[in-house]
Image 1: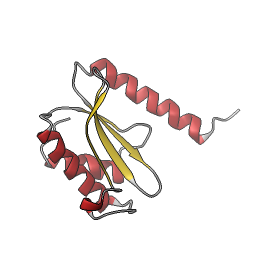
Image 2: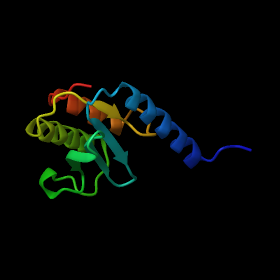
Image 3: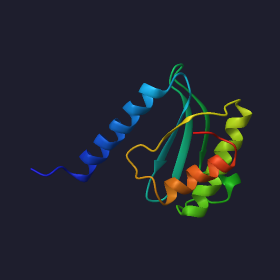
Length: 119
């Protein structure tokens, strides 16, 4: 029997996350979630179980409420890089979840790298 799209997504997400946890060495994880209308990202410290910084297209100050395109993703990536610097984080691991690394996810990652985050 063929696997559903959701099952394949969940398998991809867990495979990616388990690889990241093996290599983490105490570095925080930059976790991305993309829906059909928004994109959000969190900088998570898995050792202590806390969120260090977050950014989303749902925030008014970014000016991209309810949009989910590459430009909005780039603004979110720049915002998370700025907030990570304020939190004292320069290096992290990029957790794309089960999403493929192209398009909006790649635009977010490139903008975060340009903002000074290393992953």
